[in-house]
Structure formats: structure tokens, C-alpha cells
Image 1 (tube, rainbow, N blue to C red):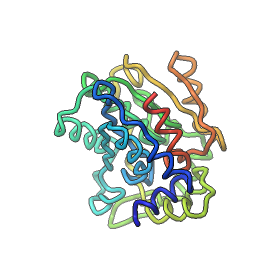
Image 2: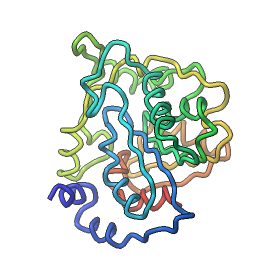
Image 3: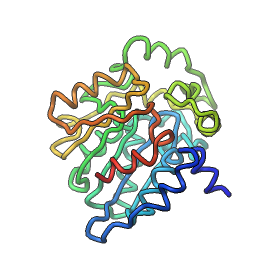
Length: 262
């Protein structure tokens, strides 16, 4: 029953048919995906996409950053952007992963860039899904447009001594389906403000020398993502668009899973 509910929430009644129709890939074509979530989310948001990828025989990991999602009980004043980067690098090393396709959504783009900078030898390619890639010495808030920065700071609060940003409604991420909105709203958790304020430390350009792809969600398109999309186009990244809103892993998991494999 839980599986049916998840499929319905993610993509409507056609999702089950798409999943059951998935073709299992040959062993030589199987990939290892590490899927990074965005702000206020957790590894849980990737469940619809991960289910489809695993049905095809791919290995999929969906780590949750310290202090959010099912790890919200670990929230503390010391959690910052480097904590998130360490979460992912530690998981990759503990699982002895190599040849990874690293996929980052939204805020997770900063984390992905930090991970690639630290362990590039373990990563085969990177996909930024409507995600800012960041740059050396710049924080998420420092890069954000003034209106986005002001909105984030206006949503600041204190939980058990930790400054946090409280989550908006998931409609801000382009979701409109009532069931999807409710599912994401009840799962989101506050984000530690320090993660937004800490500058990203990189030794080179974001994404390094790896093959990179940028997927832009354009229906509706979030204006604050456009500078990152433009950077990707101008620097020769593979670029494609997805006709859905920002939380594509929830609103269009079939098509997104297809694009990640391709």
C-alpha cells in the first residue's frame, strides 16, 4: 500500500505502468547514482526516481544531510555547508563507490561542487538539476538575488539554540498537485542558516574537469536559477530542459529518471 501511495503522489496513475515497463539494463550498462537533495528536503524526496532507477538494475544512494529530514534530530549550531559535504564524501568512501554519476538538486549543487572538488577520482560525471553550482569563496546567500536572500532571512528562526530557515510551502517549488504538495509539505524540515552563510571552498571551477550536465526546470522556471543555467551554457556543459517545476523528482519522476540514465 505504501508503494502504491508513493507512486501516485509522485506522478499520478501512469507511474505504475512506467515503472513496471522499465527495461533492466545489461550489467555493463549499470550505473551508480548518488542523488543529493536540496534545501528543506532529505533523501526521501528522491524515492520516486530511485525506485525507477533501481528497477532497471542501477545502484542508487540518496544520503540525507546532517540536521534535516530523518536526521533532523542532529541539528546543532555547528552544522554548516562543510558538514553536508563531509556527509556525502564519508558515505561515498564508506560504501567504496567509484564511477559515480553524482546528481544534485537545488541547494545540493553547492554540496556536489564541494564533493567533486574533494574526491574527483571517485566521480564519473555530474548532473545539476535546477541547481546552482556555486563558486570559490561565495556563499549560497551571497550568490542569491536580493529578494531571495531577504525571503530566506525573513524566514529565520531559532530551534534549540540553532539558527534555521523555516521551509516555505512546496508550491514555491512549482508543485501544484494537491497530494504532492501535501506529501512534500509534511516531510520538509528547517535548514541550518550557517549552511547558507558559509562560503564554498573550491580549488578550481565548479564541477572540476568532469563531464557535466545541467537540467533546467522551466514550467514554471525559478528566476534565481537562471544565472547558473546561463553559466552552464556559456561554459560548454551539456544542457537540457524539463517541462515541469523545480521539484522535478516529485512531479515528473519517469522523465527525470530517463534523462539521468541517458
